[in-house]
Structure formats: C-alpha cells, structure tokens
Image 1 (cartoon, rainbow, N blue to C red):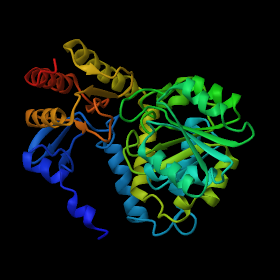
Image 2: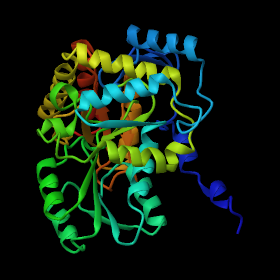
Image 3: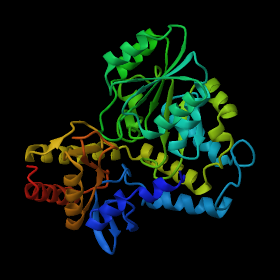
Length: 397
C-alpha cells in the first residue's frame, strides 16, 4: 500500500471548504487585541488566548525590538551548547521568584515542554504516568513518548478524583508515579480539583505535574496559577506553562525543585536537541511578566469580562460549561450545526473557535470562546448580541 494514500483519501477539509464553512487557518492581517483584521474586515476576537491583551502592548513590542537589535534574530544553538543568553537566565530567575519555586527551566515551545518533562522522568516499567483523560495534546504526546520507552501509562476519568484513587490503588505503593493534569482544562475551562489531587498524591506516594498554560494570568494570587489558587504552592511538585498566552510570546517553562530542574536540564532531549527560545520571544515574555506584576488589575478585569459573557449567554438559554476562568464554551451539539454557527458568527463580525468531533466527544461540539482583559463592554455586548441573534436563527435558544 502507498504510504501517502491516506493523504489523497482525506477529503473532509476540502468538503467543508466547498460548503463555505471552513473555519481554520484564517490569516490575521492586523491585530489590535480585541479587534483583528481578517480578509480586509474588522472582526471582534472572541477566540484568542491573549488573556491579558499584552501582545499589542507597547512595552512588550519595544522589548522584543530591542532584543533583536542587541542579540539578533536567533540563538543558533540549543541551551545546552551555544544557545544560552543572559536573557534566558534572567527570565528563569524572575519566573522562579514569581512562582515561589527554587528553579525554572525554559523550553522552546509550550507543547514541547511536556515532551521534555514526562519521558525524561518516567522511563521504566515500574514507573507510571497517571493522566487525566482530558489533558491537553502536549501531555498526551509526552505520555506516549514515555510509554514508547517502556514506562507504564494509566488514565483516569476527567477531573474525577474517585477514579484517580481507583487507578492509584491498583499500582504498587513503592513504584514511581507522576500524576499529570491540566490546571485549567483548555477545552472546557474547568479547574482541576487540586486539593484532592494533592491529597491522593501524598497518600499513594506520587509526584505531581500541573500544566498551567491556561491558568497563569487567569487564576491564583496575582495570576500565579492553580497551586496559588488553592494555597498549595509548596505541595505541587512541578508546574509547567507556556509563553504563548498570558506572556504574549512563544516558549514554555517548568518550575520546581532545583535538583529536579537540574536533572531535566542535563537529560531532557527536547531541551538539549532544540534551538533555544529566540531573543525577541524571551524579551517579550520578560516584559509581559513585568506588566503582570505591575498591573494586577488585568487579572480581575479578565475574569469580569468572561463572567459577563458567561452570565448573559446562560440567561439567554445557551448550554454553557460552567466555570470561572477566561474560557466560556458554548455547546452546540453536532458538527454541522457547529460549522453553521461559526460561519454565521464570522459573517456577523465575531471570531470564535469551533471544536468538532473527534476533537471533542459527540454531543459536546462547541463554540469555544475566550476573553481578554482588554475587551471593553462594547466588544462584549457585540459578541453577546451576535450569539443571541444567531442562536435564535439556529434554534439553539
């Protein structure tokens, strides 16, 4: 059989394009944060992970430009060899101070971070990755890499601590175990039951890794993430995150004990064999971190904005996954309806993310909306009004 035959047989995207419903790979021509330009039209953005609205902040852009002037456009090597700048060390130090941990290590992308941590720490048959079934794809990739080098993999029902305990009970008490979970789940916006997860980790001799990609800048004291939200800063073993959301840049990080970070620094293939984060990316993240600390109003404003939309759409009759984060998912229920609603919203001037099967289970197809601290009431009202009008047209409310 021709290896590439599957490529020629795949027509789903072409079929959707032919119907005029294709929502992906839309090129943004200008980006002001709450409003972007796509195909020559101004569109209110209700699908970005730019939670604090910092990608267009003058200080962040200036920092990136100055870094390029000083260091050039790239590092031309991995952190392990010629790719470490003083900027990398500065950002690691400031992040460690921000999160109250002993050390931080940078990775080149957030997605890559999980692949740098999980298979590096969990490597043998008597070591286990214990993972929430709804964890982000980067965690899934990391755990499959660990499984590929003979580590054992167990999964538990989404945010179900009783099922987590069921899984842990059947594992040897003296085996190495790493419980991995999103802090804020990227699709539904739910927050992990961290107090119970930490309690079970202690009871069953497991370590914890929490992915705070959608948590930092959103929950916790001053936007410090999930552990901070529950006053468990000293109880979570490792916290990973990304710079592509709150920190208005590109890259990833892991925070934890110095000895663990030191081990990852000298054993993680994803770090050793990847070019390091670019000067502009690191400088932008540093500037964003500085703004997060200096302008704490951005975090409650973000949540206030999301809560306004969540409340209005719930009262209008939409099926909303309840939460208290920046993510407000609107359940539609099937692929065809999801594509139709996305197109109508787009034509009305609102951009959202459409999640269809198999990315989400059947019946949970959704408009995944997310908000920024820089959305003003006029933007939010425009989004809400568009949802109400189109929801009525499609019989959703």
